[in-house]
Amino acid sequence: MSRLNAAHQRLLVLLLTLLAMALTARLGWWQLDRAAEKKALQAAVEARGQQPSLLGADLAAEAPEAQLHRTVRLRGHWLPEHTVFLDNRPMNGRVGFYVVTPFQISGRSELILVQRGWGPRDARERSQLPPVQTPEGEIELLGRLTAAPSRAYEFSAAGEGAIRQNLDPAELARSLGRELLPLTVLQLSEAAASGPAADGLTRDWPAQDVGLQKHYGYAFQWFALCALLLGLYVWFQTIRPRIRSRRSQARS
Image 1 (spheres, rainbow, N blue to C red):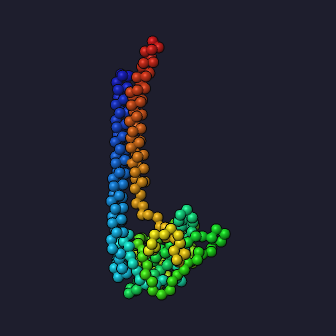
Image 2: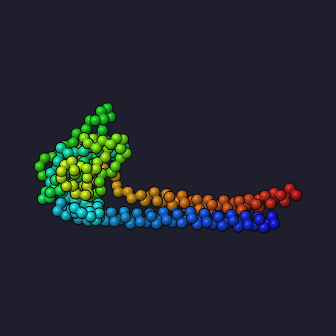
């Protein structure tokens, strides 16, 4: 009877181990599948960035997802009195502001928000705004279409004033009494440069990251756990009993 119970226990341990290994292996492959999807998405994003630049008349007022990540060349003028400085935005290891200004596109009634660049924060006076040169009159800017400005943790519910934690485009449109296009523009420099542009802002925007490394890391963890389960089973069910048996025989 004891031998039968021991056999049942070994069989149960084997089944549970196989089930756990199958589950962890499946989760690892699922993460690899997610990585493949993200890789295809990244390729699509890069392909969109290589397409010819859109003009102001081409921007979609509805269902704009198809235009995400496209480059644009817009003519128009700034509305500098409505500039917003988004606080606690890092760039190149420093903390500062993302400068966002509405832009009136020539030939259109709508406005579009432009993330113009990054400016440093004064460590001694947090309310001190970085100097930003805003040209008057009609200009042309180069940019990349993106979603609304990224959100940071909001310490307060303050949604007014020049310095803000986050910006709600719909709320801004209501306060302006004007229609905003659903996408925003990430302004780019015409020539590759690591320093501030003529307007005093830095545009070393981080590259598009779809999270490939995260999925690869998770997949490695699941496959490692699967291998660990196999190793533990082999050790406790095969190797360790044999070692104990040999020691017992040597003592006898």
